[in-house]
Length: 244
Image (cartoon, rainbow, N blue to C red; front, side, top):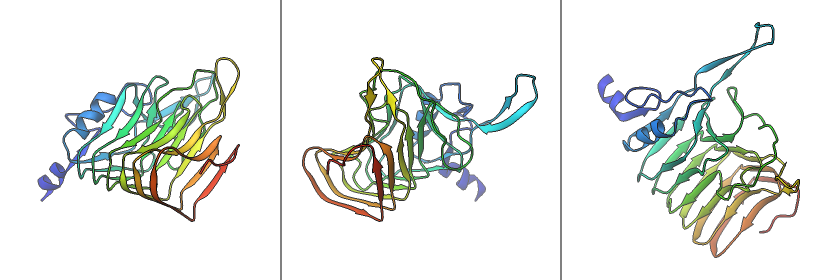
């Protein structure tokens, strides 16, 4: 029974994947290899990191993140992914983000962020910086019919103009969670107004329950043809009006 249980999961930190989760090393290939097994992917907490004061004494301990330099793709039909408390994907400044494209997938506790370590629980705030807005969203959902996101957190600084983009997907449910932006400026000093959630063409039967979208330029933006969109007990706070 124990052997069967072990085989049913792909723990990204175990052999043969060995993701580090230390907030520094690129874990893209290791995590992609775990995803490609098609098994239930488990993301435990990253490596504990001790932060020292200038005099060498211990200031505090943080939980390291799984750094993504490239593009992480979840494209296996029926796959499940579980993020334990404190486990986070941290996008490098040049990362094209996370892509979900397989049908009937389930994600529990998915946490995506940029530029900071995260303690156990909700993410902290990335450090503001000047840069050119990244053309890709932090999270792209494309052709992921039947997707279930349970308490997702997408917390990205202004380097990504769009935090979550959904397109060509029928039957998606988001239960709880938060999409949180960080006001930032580009290299010319202009404010980057992030879009929290963009619903593109081909989105049908979208449902969000108890989802919070805040600190974005545009909370929710509809682009193209969408059908049957539902927001129940959700909160949306942003710097401009919604474009629904």
